[in-house]
Amino acid sequence: MQSGKRAASEDVQHIAVMDMVWTPSSCCGINRRKAGYIIASITAICNMVSMGNVIFFLPNKNNVDDFCNNFLFNCHDYFKESYFKYFCFRISTNCPDHLYLGASIPLGMGLLLIVSSFFLIHGIRKKMPDLMIPYMVMMGIAIALLILGSAILVIMTIMAINDLYGLALALLLGTVTFIMTFFNLVVRAHYIEVSQTIKNDYKPMKT
Image (cartoon, rainbow, N blue to C red; front, side, top):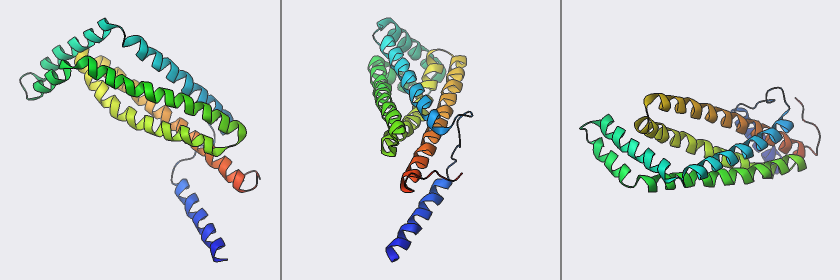
């Protein structure tokens, strides 16, 4: 009896914690199951395109050299005679290596997000919530890395090109971060729905 009460208490606490995070009931008027399929497809396609852009840009030595040269010139001009001028020199010295290292992160994350998107599709189709977890975890990591990387990339873009490009990039990355967060919340909502349905012996949840 006590174990049953303890389990019920834990369920109540778990639900209370989940209620603290906004749970969308649909996505643009589409139910969460169909939205999950669409979200997984969009995630896979966008990451394929993103990986293709990185792979296309990096092998072109002229692109890399132009970016690094512009960064060094504008960085020195931006910081004038301040201490940060040394920072500009250190970054630009191995600028191509830094670009290649930085590009390996989105390439690796893109591949993992594509794989987790297929897991998500299969998990939705078979009503297996455990297969939805990799997508939510990878998307959460991707959002955190995007926020961190966006700040660095925007600063480098401002120095390598100009303020207008940096502002446009900041707005774009901010929009992408918002969309990714919303997508993850929709998937999480469907994950909770399927999990609760399974716990209730496949009885439809009360809305």
